[in-house]
Amino acid sequence: MTVTIERLGNNEVKLNIEVDAAVSAFEYDKACKRLAQRVNVPGFRQGKAPKNILEKYVGIAALQREVLDSVLPTIFENAIEENNFELITAPNVESFEFLEDKTLKVVAKFELRPEVNLIEYKGMSVDVEEFKTAGDAVDKELKNLSERMAELKDITDRKTINTDLVNIDFDGYVDGEEIKGGSAKNYVLDLGHSNFIPGFAEQLVDKNSGEEFKINVKFPDEYHDEKLKGKDAEFNIKINTVKERIIPEINDDFAKKVNSKFTTLDLLKEDIKKYLENNEKSENEKRVANAIFAKLLETTNIDIQESMINREIQALMGEFRQRINMQGGNFDEMLEKEGHEKIYNQMKDEAVSRIKTSLIIGKIAQNEKIEIKNEDIQGKIANLAAAYGTTAENIISEIQKNVNILNSINQQIITEKVTKLLIDNAKVNYIQK
Image (cartoon, rainbow, N blue to C red; front, side):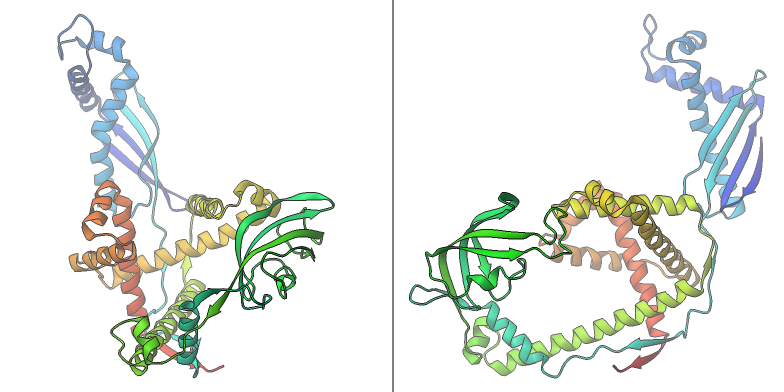
């Protein structure tokens, strides 16, 4: 048996394999015996069909494939091990031929992991705009808490004000035609925090519960629907009910309502302060990590093959399609509107960035001999269970069904460990703005 290795461009390797006639014939006979045990040939007991009958029944091509499946894994494994190849795709058989003298010739290709030429990644110096918690952050958090815990009171003895919540029926028209998706019944609108088109909520102020009226608005020039951009519209409105927010006073009783463990307002403030301090630390770590990886991406030379980029683009396109569809949009319409080339180029930039980042993380993990321990996986599973409101056992059950979940967990662990190593060893110059 001979195996000739040919390095092609773009991190691709070609194997030219020639299996001796004696070995090939021996493997062919073994393949016949194995297939004979698996198929029922009419007129013969299981496993007893002669080779010539079996060849006619299942086809010579099926028997030859059986030979390939038997001999190639070991050949590939030996070639990879002897040459220290790091594969990113499984070997692909491009062609094979069984010659008349029974010699087997095979041509196979696979892609190698691109070489990563790292600069010195420990002790990197980066400039980072420091995130500082505002001095009044605790008071703002308390205010937000009080607004979220506000009680709603039905209002019938006054007109609406811009902090009320109104339950409305509405239907809209442009050029006398009803707007598609421009009507609703019993829609609750927060007049103080409306995401409707400008001027809509404002015209519902100073109205009475039960009142019916018309309003006129203009769709923005940059509106997402081409048919409505810059168009004048008329809406019929009926206010069904009006509710007022009764915001609780921020005191000890309020603190107890937030959580019974806070017996005083000071204890609640202290808890908020700790949360804000942790958030500040986390945000600054994220900024440092972003700065480090941005520098690594800029300075690390990696020759990434187009096939690898195209696979990542397809994965990104799939994620983007799913996200758009989940938001109620139409991916194909968006693609047509924005232009396939524009979206493709945006995806390509992101694909290259993701691939390079992943390769850099992998190289650093290899250099530093970073390992995944059982407690790392257990911790991640516990976090996932808490995030999804389930049990660790359920997460493990899902992992057993889909190995990609475990691969994702492992990648997260490696990424976090490499990121921590880079942050711990970085020279950070915080910039105040």
